[in-house]
Image (cartoon, rainbow, N blue to C red; front, top):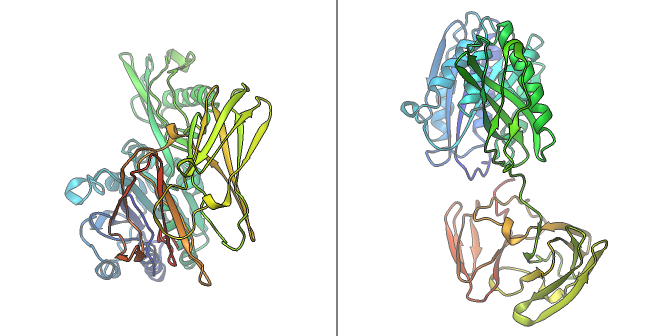
Amino acid sequence: MYFLSVSTPLDLVFLLDGSNTVTPQSFWRAKAFLTSVIGEFRLGPRHTQVSVFQYGGVVRQEFTLNTYQDHGALAAGLAAIRQLSGPRLTGAALQYAVRNGFSAPNGGGRNVGKVLVLLSTGPSSDSVQQAASAAARAGIVVYAIGVGPSANMYELQGIALSASTVYTVSNFYSLAGFRNELSRRFYPDLLPSYTTVRLSVNSSLGLGRNPTTLNYAVAQATLVSAVHTQLMGVAGIQAIQLVDLYGNAMGGSAVFRLYTTYYTDFTALTARLAGGGVMGNPTVSSSISGALSTSGREFLVAFTGNDPRDMTNPRLYISSSNGQNTSVTVSAGLGAFQTTVTVSGSQVSMVEVPSSLVMYGSEPHSDRVISVTSTEAPVTLYGLVKELNTIQPYIVLPKSSLGTEYLTVMYTPRNGYLCQFTVAATENNTNIVIRPMVTIEYSGLTINRGEPLSLTIGPSTIGAIQIEDEEDLSGMF
């Protein structure tokens, strides 16, 4: 058993199908599946909290988010669950879990990611649409898993609101092999990234909030089509879902969830919905911001070494972002290396960096950081390291796109090789805190898993540190 390194805590709620179409053996396998998935996570009030609901003819909360803080007790709690039986009231169960599962009295209320995993063996005996909309409005990411030949794919997609969070397996026995696929989806960077947008709607239609009415269906189709046309051209938007719609003669609103490849800040959208569902073009604020820009005038880059037996010179490739000629200065090592090149607007320029600037091993403080500055125009910068048995290309972000919080993803070193990462600072005497997810040795100190390692990068104008160890520093694998 191992634990995923989830830097951001997570509230995880499971909704277990205990209806009369599930055999006792299948119900046991479903509980075993939950135990194995939960076993991948670090439990606790600062990490992942888990709650389980069961549904059949009624809905029952088996335990709350703050009931169990260790795996042994939680596994025993799961094993003690008795099957409810009865018809499959998925809609009522989902509504109840959304309303109560993440609430403060049940251990929720934290400013963390909220995920609900639904297991279903067939179509619901009641409507699921309003419950699915309620989950979306509450910011809950729903994973819907259909088990067996009677699983209703159309209904599951309506519950999850995104095809990327819907799965089907042939039977309960097959769930066991699905554990890793599901649990790894809960990495913070793999959870669906979305932003919620509210549109003001003026309508003469009596929409209410009932998705089964004709008026609602007409308005829904019209709005989705219009907003899709307006926004799918915006870089980074992957999908658009309408999660709530309300309107009457006095006005109303529509709430959309926009799935994105990165966080996007949408400030304002407005639309007019006239009688009969006819809508004019929505207006989108001009201040929509997209992905982190890869274009800029100031960059920092540090080259980490791979195989010290092959000391080839790293390369930087520079291109003008707007086609204008510009002068670019590359310097490093507090004056140890400096060169200036003219980058033509229509060509890519290459600068070869001395191999002495490659960082090897753990370096508590290093001045082997490379500064790149463009004077006349913004540029895009790429790095390339060619060493024995490996080629490492990557794009360099400008200073304006850098941040203060990062999650590292690494691998498990083999055959005596080491794992490493580097942190560079743009300002003098920058204080940083690193939490390695395995126990490591650094500069004669033993840093236990999860403990903070506080360091200061400085006092030089540009500096970096590099940490290297024989363990997977991120604890990912």
